[in-house]
Amino acid sequence: EPEVTQTPSHQVTQMGQEVILRCVPISNHLYFYWYRQILGQKVEFLVSFYNNEISEKSEIFDDQFSVERPDGSNFTLKIRSTKLEDSAMYFCASSEAGGGRSPLHFGNGTRLTVT
Amino acid sequence: AQSVTQLGSHVSVSEGALVLLRCNYSSSVPPYLFWYVQYPNQGLQLLLKYTSAATLVKGINGFEAEFKKSETSFHLTKPSAHMSDAAEYFCAVQAQTSGSRLTFGEGTQLTVNP
Image (cartoon, rainbow over all chains, first blue to last red; front, side, top):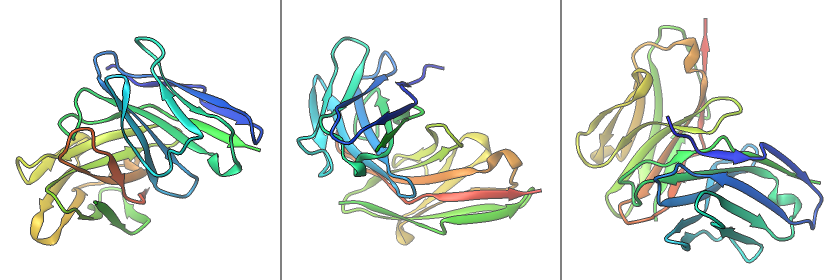
């Protein structure tokens, strides 16, 4: 079964550094998402992306965050200047259609540790 | 806006016993509802979803959930727990509009005792 793949599985960075988290969504999917889960807390929505633009973003997704689909297969999340509170598990997801008509398929996540 | 409440952050059952994980939702519009499972060091895997067809939804691994509008609930059940069911379970709600976000509950850690 096709999978969403995320790299790296674990990223350690120093406060103030830029990080790029990478995702390869399922190939025929059109909607892409980033969620995050801070240790011990619930999974939170960050952003959804369709047709090469952001379709929805949460209040967490401020100017420090950006997303990009640089080619036909990758979907990236960039954090411009990381803060300690950005430490979390970041999940990429994709779906064929939006609005619940097709389920989200999640990757295994990237654990980001900011020191 | 929509929200989800999962009652019980930890549930422990014996192998072979009934599993009942509770989820109540709040939504201003008819929602889609989902249960996801997360095994250690893995991503979120869809167990089942409710999208306004049948109110009793069957999912993978013998799980099912019933949508009860009057109770705003979507509880997850399995008649007989297996050791391999030990994982964290998340209920999630999504409004029926294109591209809308999934809102997750806080999760329930299921432990299955031999």
